[in-house]
Image (cartoon, rainbow, N blue to C red; front, side, top):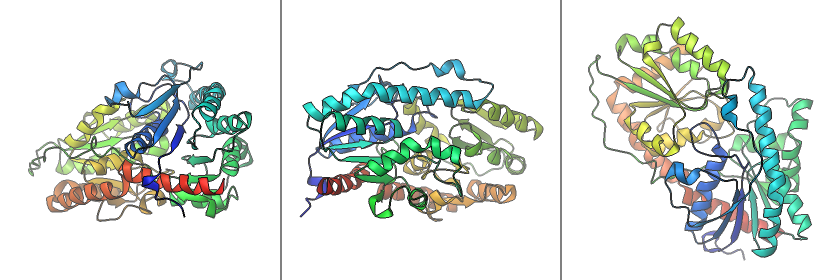
Length: 415
């Protein structure tokens, strides 16, 4: 009989891509999730080892990480601050891949030592390159430690994966096939991985990303002044890149400003695609709404809850995600009424009584949905109340950690 997961006390090793820092909004999302999972597993009584770089997570979140055992991995990495405005986003992408690959090579010895010295029960890897390293480490240590691979990538979610993309995805394909068990962060991602005949569906478990519900919590109730001249703040938090689709919300502003002339749209996030940032600024000027739009750039993660609480509504107009966006989960946990796009990875889990939905390709539908949130106080209050309850039920990290423990337990029984 398999023991109850929450009563299993395991030695778990976690690792993601080894990004040199996880500070600001718009970078290191997977690392952020791995730390959240690690803290929750430790809270449940497990011994958690986290293989990572010299990470700035603690400084930027102001959290006590003493429950975790951090195994620092030094590796050479490029300073992406030098590439904030490249002529091509491909350059930044190549440097990122090189950085992650170098981390993986340098992390092999850390995995070997943990397997041999700490007798790790489970390796749970959340990125393809350290997944390869963990596989090699098991071979070098002559160990049969179960490997649970967690896929987060959006690249599988396509009608057809090109030959070129299959070469790029080969490391992840290898990890998925060699892993004892696999987790994905959405049902949609699971279906696409299985459809591409990478691994059978029976080997895959769906576990969504989580949220620290004590950090991302509702603040004092905002007293909405319902007069048309009152200020309204619309918040959009995400990387500045095409798939995040900030242009959709900018295009609604001319209609919104007819009723709320003092509305302010705050865009927070890293300019991953600087040319797209330039396009957005040009669009603001063309629509004559530049005074209503603020590009806030990156902010330390621990400051984000304050921005969410102070906004009137949040908007997540993304076109493509591997799962429900982390920024949406955080907005829901803060009890914020949120307008989201109708894409499968969101609609598979979030319902209409929790969020307002709109087709982001239809500006009129987006404008109508946003104006209803801003003008209909009763509707907005209903969403605010439901969103917090929904986040606590579905995305609290402790509940997510229990789901991972079930997968770990299953992996131990088949290894």
